[in-house]
Image (tube, rainbow over all chains, first blue to last red):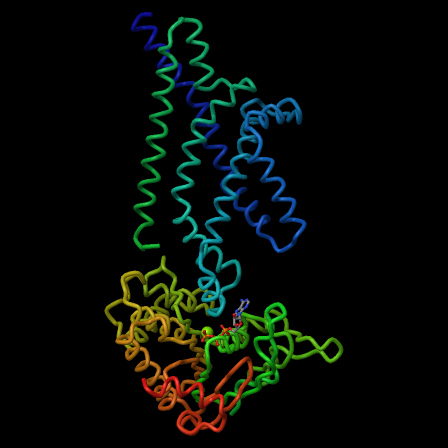
Length: 213
Length: 255
Ligand SMILES: Nc1ncnc2c1ncn2[C@@H]1O[C@H](COP(=O)(O)OP(=O)(O)OP(=O)(O)O)[C@@H](O)[C@H]1O
Ligand SMILES: [Mg+2]
């Protein structure tokens, strides 16, 4: 392998990483709000709804994301491009994890907060969005950071349904050039992305850390 | 003038009856203290009146607005529609034992959030009033602090200012000094004394017997979910009629 080959791989991997990033961000756009909705249903006082959501969350969290991808690709046969099928599967899967994190966060807020808001006349909606959610966000930042970093790495699973992303590209380069180098470069790409994620979370925790818990 | 009417209210948690048919009234400008042993249902009573908890049976009215009354047929309490209750609830303020300030808001925002977003005041007006209230509770300097930066006594005074900012007709206190170090109770009691002098209508659950005797117009002694004795504070605390009241007060006499 020449330096040119290596440079070529780096450049093309950077291009491929756009797919990885797309998958990452589109998954978050879907799963962050969807997870909140799932958490709300899970905590609903309407028993059957909460019960069904529990079942759904168990399935999504209890089976491999890889199987879910195959299921949505070849079972449901969504009429989308492969990348978007992956986004659907990732979105639902991560929403399920986020739902449980949100729920933990919401339940960790002392009931006195809700009661104080209640007596001051805040509506349920105002209480949730002004009083509860900001405190929840602060508390769930650490577990959310973990999930975000896992998601960066999980995007590699999309190659199972034929999405060309960093890992699948590295694999094909590895077999063409018969060297492990592309795989090492791919590792560096993931590492850089996750350093950014980690820095963002550290900054967010610092910014929201103006009050102690 | 009577502003709160409570008749024969009953409340159970599961099978355990906690309120066994209490009745009392509160008049405009009156200070009522509620005393009684732990577990006698004092907090539950306040929570029922302030709509944090629902009664099983009985009658509660604010002025001539009925909040809940027993349905003849079923014997269960029926509440007025939610919007009506929401309007009434805004006439009540509640100060909790453990303050329950909003930790993510500054002192200023703790006080102004409800006036702005519930009462619809402008930010300028709400902040001006909040500053006056902070002066009144002796915390003029603390508007920009966060609750975690304040002592318990200061937090409780902010909580009182927060309740006052909604201009309540009745202010309820659930053991406002019980979570505080003894040397900090004085500052809270002083604030409540000043409110009493301004003829604020208040219901105070407390274990501070001397304070209850000096500040209130009337004292209720509760035991096991019922009112055992009520009347003039001097009479109830210094010369109780009931044996149970006497036994309860005996525990405080040496302090
Ligand atoms: N949410 C609840 N669920 C079940 N039982 C409850 C609940 N709240 C209160 N109780 C019970 O009701 C009874 C009265 O409680 P309450 O808190 O009203 O007493 P209290 O007079 O305020 O006591 P203290 O002086 O300790 O504050 C107690 O036996 C308590 O265990
Ligand atoms: Mg209590």
